[in-house]
Image (cartoon, rainbow, N blue to C red; front, side, top):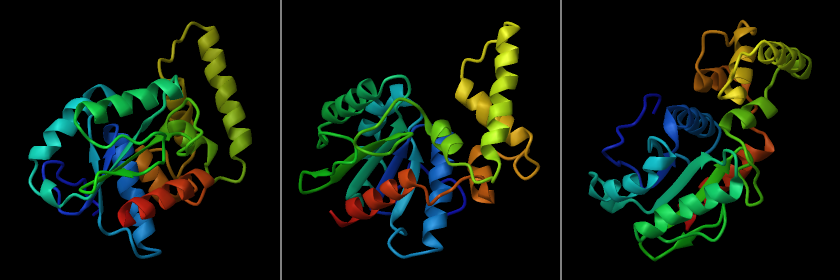
Length: 220
């Protein structure tokens, strides 16, 4: 499934709802990575729910999608952003408002007998999370040997621009893509493409936590 799946049709029982195109394509590449190495990840598809403000409506809409009757699990992935606790409550509220089972905490799995539900938040992808985003996860787990030295230079560069009244609304994104821009292998690539090309360590602790969650929700 190298192409983005049709979000209006479910052909597998386990659905991963992702916040935005970057997270969706990242998860598609991660599923491809897993499928090349072991069994158990074929019955998953990643779907873009188009932003956190749209999650409530999206959870209502998908009940009308072709193939929804075969769905046995839903995993929601989004950024914690500025406040981990607020992000947790927002996901739980969206689930509750649509009569889905509501997990107590991130990475918990709860079932009503018909469908199992879980959610997890970037960047930590675990029960005890923190503020931040997918980009923070990637920055913390870049593969290049001298990455820390390069990131120090990137930080200094961005700080010098800020001192000249250059404003960065999404500083973490600016940091990551500045890093990509000075690395020949990744300079022209989108986030998911850079990850697929080897920029990111898919075997990091956070992704192994997500891998376990995927396996557990498929078995629930």
